[in-house]
Image (cartoon, helix red, strand yellow):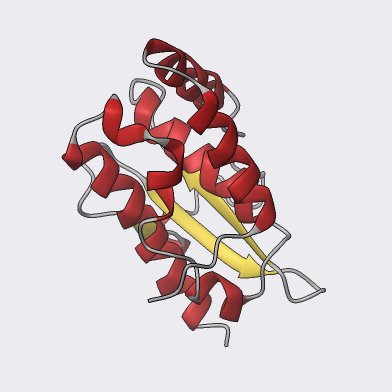
Length: 144
């Protein structure tokens, strides 16, 4: 198993690691509010997106390499699921435009532990974050 975490994602996780208790949840809520809307070309195209079946909320993910070979992901998650939206934003901001498909495949599956989420979230919620990464890796693998 790899210990690789892209630098940008590592910085985000480190910031969460400094937050204590309720601050972590408030910071996660801030991330949830930053989840961008799908780009116009992807709106209404859920059939092009991967549904995250394990998630209780209807979450979809789409990824593709940009011209420079670095992966970019898009998530569609409902506003009434702030934790899910926060996780999606952390991953998007942490890896978009920074990692090749091969590097995405090497990201540590337990990357989220660095943020200390286990102190404030259930194991089920944290596994959800890992599940998002699994889907991102599945998409990246198609582009290697």
